[in-house]
Length: 599
Image 1 (tube, rainbow, N blue to C red):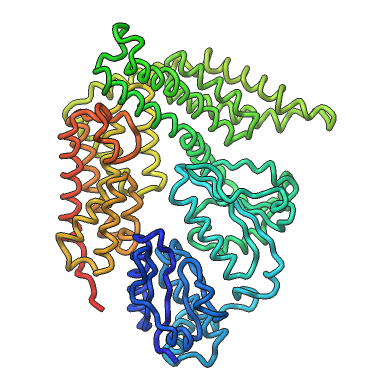
Image 2 (image 1 turned 180 degrees about the horizontal axis):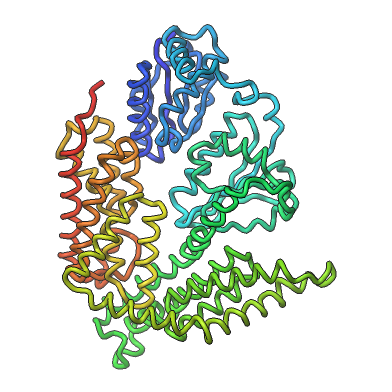
């Protein structure tokens, strides 16, 4: 029998995360005094491959990602996701050991001893029968799910992985539709939905649930699917309600209040996610127009030229839709489709009266909650209810939103935005320094969480008001954490394990692409030392960028949009700001982190 737990990491398309997961498992196993053998499958080939004899003798194999069915030949496997390993490697190992003990009492002495330690620590003899993955009562369950996040990149697919792995471990059937940045993939068909016993929506944005009418549905954020997919499926099975029906019982009031508090953030992120393509496209077209026609390409003297045309498409068409789209989809998130027309109309009014993105935010929430209230209060009977979503709700919602924007909300918000715009454009010295410090620090505190998104939304929204310096500070500060990790791993090798140093190389690429989440695995291992170091560097980067007066017209893309002429002003100083923050964070990491333990 093998004396080590065998692990296969089979996610070759995600090399960086694979290497980080390998290191996380090794660190957790070292703390648990558990012998481990890990094979990592990458696109370049297998690292530390497991021999067929080892696999044949193993009572259980831990598979991260997809289990290689042919190699395992029916052998018991515990399947986990990359996200689960990166979030709690020790927890994954404990679950695996419990499964090994429950299913293989004659397993190797090393594994049984490790399981005994886990059992003693948790005070349990193993998982309860109803909780054991693969229990017979799960096999007939058919589940469909939808995952989505504001940017449609990382968390959408991490949640998909979490749910699929959890379903495989429980033994139930699952199909997951991802609504990502490139649209819906693996789309659920009407037959899929009709056959489903349970629907799970794991999303941080609004997802249209109308096609699930009458099905038992449970909604959560992506975090639940990423961290504990099995727990989410169990909770959904216990608490799901038929879509369109009232909850069966007025449960705890406190959780309901919490959902209401987090609802506004989710509605805002839905609006931002739909607005982003307009901001990016418009910014690039304007930058290209400047590149072809010079800084005065918008003058009548250039009318009809290619540069003038590209500038006009970017500013007068694409940018002009930013605020209506933001407002419309905030309202859609609150009130579903009937909210889109009042929300977009309110956004157009905000544009016309100079209320900008602040007016768009206000009109979106006014329209959404007004339509939601009207929908709840207006009762026309079954024969006339069909008029509500296409006539009554859009009409009354637009009237309420429009009148409030013109006569009550619009002008004060426009005055506030004008004052904010003038203040931001006139920032110099200590004022610019403080704003840059604040925005930069916010980008690194939670690296993709609500604080990070608040800073990003602030910078993006101001682009519509032709205020570009906060966006420059935000993107530069968001690039700094992964770059600092990579630099620190190169300068202070003793502070990082060999696997961490390999992972840091890929983190550098993520930093260049403005994917701040590339630093999360390193911060998660040692948050009290890593997060302050990264926040200090990002704050410095934001401050230098603001002091230098750098402006950025494109809200995403990282270093890959910097070569575009006029996409960023004061390019040399902008690069210096990124370099300064990167170096500061790297030096602080070297000073604060403890030497890495050697195997």
